[in-house]
Image (cartoon, rainbow over all chains, first blue to last red; front, top):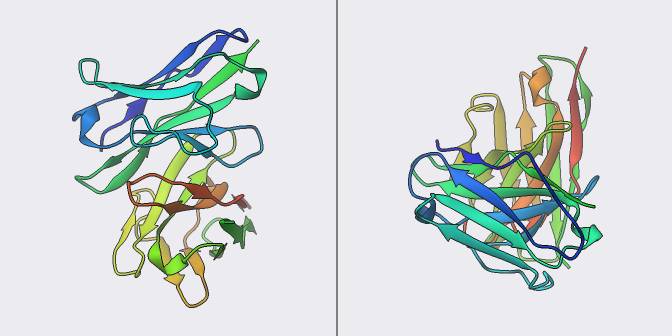
Length: 112
Length: 118
């Protein structure tokens, strides 16, 4: 199975833009879609990006996703940061060779 | 409104068993693949098990293979996880999650806490 590696934490000020990376250890990042989940303290995860760059209805367009084959990574970008964006963010993909659903270790976003 | 409600968690001794349930409503349960995902206290998300819409295809994470059994009853709109030979490292909040079709999870339950301790 491959691994997805995320930074443990990131912090940024309100109104700014932050990008969280998710690097795949082996195999191509483009092989399977990448999803991003937001988890606020004490709550269940919710999807903010699916299929690499698609936003579910109700998720503001401040959230965007992309993949970069050159770095074999996916990225979640949040612009116009709000204090309500403070949460843990997890990337997720699928290992079709096994099969196995793989999560990144999570990134704690602090908006201060 | 889609709802997934887990139940059955609790405190169990190492080596013991527990059966989790997930009651689904607000959608045609029999049309969707389902998964169990867990989260140890203060840790990240870990996929546990998958079951196809008919129940004919099942997968497990290596960490639970041979000890956990996933099943579903489409007539009762329910998903289950039978957990045997429980270990301290199985302590976690267990979520049921729906798969809309692209290997992602679009709806999650509120989770049920399983604590394995003597």
